[in-house]
Length: 189
Image 1 (tube, one colour):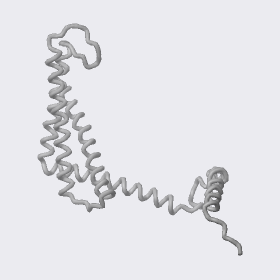
Image 2: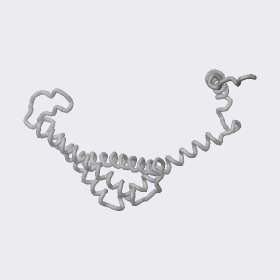
Image 3: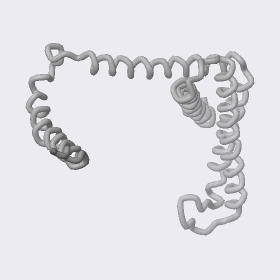
Image 4: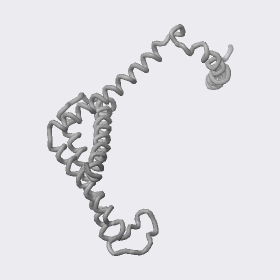
């Protein structure tokens, strides 16, 4: 496998992870914020659009590199910065353009393949469910924790008592004073 193929594979790996994360976040937002039921067809359409958007991003990056390569052609002076390309950089820029185009082509192929889209949706759904499950388990552990089951109870007790004395009790006292000032004294006859 050549350098271009390896770079395309690496680019696809990164783009796939980005797509999975985007679709996972979409599933979570729809379920939690919008109280929408999980609909694999709608999520599939979103996943396909995500793959197309990532392909467009890669195509745009290839076009930028093409313009940079054309601008660099025939320049033999010293460069003045990271993106100030010269003629000696054109080979590398041509390779980079092919890599971007290769990733874009494969992302479009995946977007047009219902099985690949379904696979992406399944992976994203599983990741979203994993997030929900771990959050629920963490909440249940914290809310259902009893002192005898907490291995850190004894060590953290002194810190909790100090926080009670230094933060919570003064705050409670200040709150009670504000309440007392806000409520007028009853008049005596």
